[in-house]
Length: 196
Image (cartoon, rainbow, N blue to C red; front, side):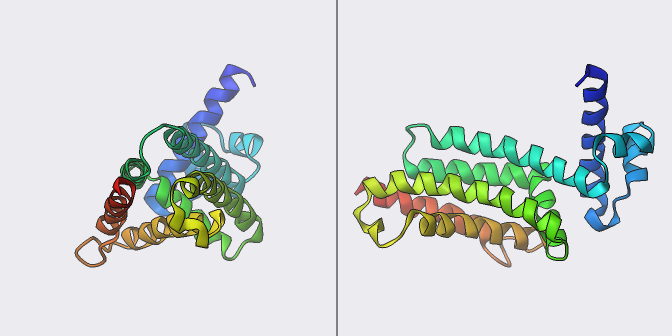
């Protein structure tokens, strides 16, 4: 892809993220995105084909960057409890950056659109596959985990983050539902288990 085309594509994706964070997926228009990006509307159709494809490309780019970040962190020699706490820090960063909003907006859109659901399922599966790899390493160190499969441990580790994301985006803070503090307490529990 030529540098000018890549620059145009990058500007469109950045404008799409801003529009989604401001208005939500259902209210985003390609015309508004084109105006924000400073490009003709035809450029969105040329590069992405549709609003749906543009938003899914945005989700994929954001998701792949975070999966790479998380994978690199899990590949370190940090104790599992420190990795969990780092994941909690990443969680806070992802809320702040708008990634969580993007993921949950597209998840909600997928409930009524099978094409979107297929892509979002694949994106989420990447997270649970990564967590299953981490679980396999943890199972070799902790005897008590043998009652679970790596996939079950991945579900037990990942689903609390998804649930926390949903309630936080609804505006329920830790005073109403202690999502963030509960996630961090799991890290403390892991520390106690690892130090035994």
